[in-house]
Every structure is written in C-alpha cells, then in structure tokens.
Image (tube, rainbow, N blue to C red; front, top):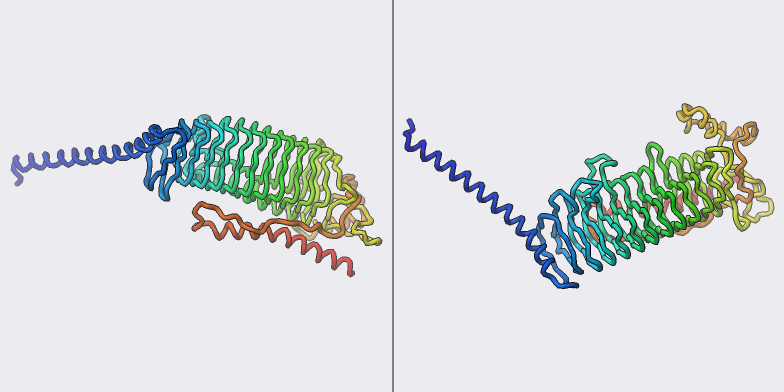
Amino acid sequence: MRTASSIGKSLVDSVQGIVLIAVLACFGFAQLANAQNVLQQRIDASGPGDTLLVPAGTYQGNILIQKRAALIGSEGAILRGDGQGSVVTITADSCLLRGFTIEHSGVMLMNEDAAILLRSSGNMIESNRLQDMLFGIYLLRSHGNVIRDNKITGRRDREVGERGSGIHIYDSHHNRLIRNTITFARDGFYIQNANHTWIEDNEVSNLRYGLHYMYADSNTFLRNTFSDNVAGAAIMYSRGIVMRKNSFIHNRGFASYGILFQDCHEMIADSNIVADNVVGMFFEASTNNLFRHNVVAQNNVALQMFANSTSNVFTENNFVDNLSPLTIVGKATGSIWNAGGRGNYWSTYDGYDLDHDGIGDVPMKIENVFNYLEGRQPNLRLYLYSPASQALAATTKAFPIIDINHETDNRPLMRPVPMRFSTTPRTSVTDNRDNGVPRKALFLGISFLGGFVLLAAAWKRRNQETL
C-alpha cells in the first residue's frame, strides 16, 4: 500500500510537471511573439530607404510597413499572419517586398483581408509565394506598382464564393502585373475602376473568371494564359481594352465562356487563341470592337451574340472546327464580317474560288440549323454530337428551307490566315520543382494548338479542292 507521504509526493510532482509544461508553453509563445516583434522592431527602427535582409525562419503575426523600405527574404523566410486582417500591410510609397512565403490571412471579404494589402504607390512586389489567404494581393487606391513573378494559391477547400481574388485592384491606376501564377482563387485578376493596367505573361487556372474587368478603361493584356476556369475572361462595362496573343483554353462547365463581353466598347482583340470552350466568345450590349487574326477553334459555339451587340468588325480570323459558328439572341447583330476586302476563314465553308484570288466567290452564311432548333427545343442538345445533327446541317446547306439569320461573310478566305504565337515558355523565379513540367507542357501545347488547327484546316481545304 502507498503511504500518505508517497501519495503527497506524487501530487507535488504532478503539479510541478504541469507548471513546467505551462512555463515551456509560455516560453514558446514568447519566442514566437519575440520573432514577430524583432522583425517589426527592425522595420520601425530602420531609416527611410533602408534595406532589411530577413533570414530564414517563421515570423508570426501581421506586419505593417509605414516608411519606405526594402524587405528581402532569404530562402525559407515565412511571414505567417495571426489569422485576422492582412498579413503584410504597406502604407508607405516606393517599398520592395521580395522572396517571402506569406500565409494565413484573415477571412473577412469586407475587410480586404489579404496576404499583401497595398495602400500606397510605386511599390514592387516580386518573387513571393502566397498561400492560405483570402485575397492574394489587394491594391486599394494604389498606383504605379509592379507586381511580378509571384505564385498565388487560394484556399482550395473553400467554395469559390468564399474566396478572394488572386490580385484585386480597386480605384488604382497605371499598375503592371507580370509573370504571376494564380490558382484556386475566386477570380484571377479583379480590376474595378482601374485604368491603364498592363497585364503580361501570367498563368491563371482553376477558378471562376481568369480576368474580370469592371468599369476599367484603356487596359492592355498580352500573352496571358487562362485555362480550366468557368470563364477565361469577363470584360464588363469597359472601353479601350487591348488584348493580344492571349490563350483562353478549356474553360468548360455550366455557362462557360472563353471570353465574355458585357457592355464593352472600342476594344481590339488581335492574335488570340480561343479554343475548346463551351462558348468561344459571348457578346451583350458590346459595340464598335475589332477582332482580327484570332483563332477560334473547337468550341461548342464559336460566337454567341445578343442583337444589341452591333458594329463589331471581324476580319482575318480563323474559325476552325466549331460545332456551331454563331448563335444569335434576337434576329440580327449588325456585325461586320469583313474589312479591307478580306473576310474570315471558316473551316465549314464549301464554296469555290474560280479567279484564284484567295477570296471565296460565294458568300459564307454564318449559321447552323441544328443550333437554331436546339434553341427552341433544349432537349435536342442530347444529339449535339450525333451523325443526325451533322446530316441536318449538310442537308440545310443543299436545301435552305429554314430562314435562320442573315449574317453573311461576303469575302470568306479560302485558306487560313498564318498566325504567329510565341513558343517560349516563361521562366518563373518561384519554385518550379512541383509544376515546371506541366507549365512548360501547357505553353507548348497552346503554341502548337494554333498551328495544328490551321494545318488541319488547310489539309481539309486541299482535299476539297482536289475532288
């Protein structure tokens, strides 16, 4: 039997153990708090324009930069927020933030909780890895910043509506977004009331809208890839957009589009690839836009247009192997299907060119009777890929008994327009060990897609001419 004294000694030992554990826990929390405090103290104690080299380690807690500074993280430097608000907030102009893993922001959409919140101008944010955050980088009345070579991964365990955007810009102008990779956010880029934004060489996938413009004028996006989203891009209530050499690929799902234009005017779309989407391009209340040198290929519907989208010019585009070339909501669009004497190449065109000038002698009627019937009987979509639908389309060409629309390309091209797309995959400064091969394969696939569809179309046309 245990004596009273031995029992008392055991109780004392247990209490001492509990106290020791509590002391160690407090010491650990103090160490974490001290790590954060040391970094914040270094920032607060630095002079304007100082460069702070931050060694590897986890720095717990949110950071506030209120004076011009350059923070450069060594490999393994992690800024981990406290789960409320933004991890890094920059209110001073002309700051540099480079080389960090930044994670664990708050969860409040209305509070702009982000990995990085910019409330200043002229900053450079580059080569950071952002994860476990609501918004990736949030620009609020923040102008003239450069944001490049960042890898942004949202909270994939949350529903899309509960996520923030990868890069969110509000009331901010003249910003440059270059070579960023964004996945599993709500929108890749959300740009509202922000003019003269330059977006170049970014990769955006697995989210709602790859690019989302709202009331943003005179923006340019060049050589970006938007794939596997609900919509590659949604350009809404904007003017003067320029889009060149971008790829909108495999955006499929319910109501999915390669590009959606809503109340968009006076823009230029040149040398883009829009391929393997449910709808290639969708137009509503969009006017006076120019589309040239684009490849629109292998979509269920190449173009879907409301009748209020008028005076849009299509010239020297390649429409290849789309199940339907055009769906109109209404009776006509007032679109212009050729300019300067040159129309577009249509892989379904079966006319002839007796004078060998490269222009078809018979106008191309831009219609598909099966799509017309399906609009009235949605259940017919079950037969979309069937031989019967293809036979119906061929029969209608020979015996045009249904007046579908009056959209006509009077100068159809006999051969595809040669296209030039960059085949050099970009090199990111972020860690490529887990995704370098898929990224390279994606870029090469995009580049070769344009060439492949054009080659296939040319071969098909050659066979028709030899018959």
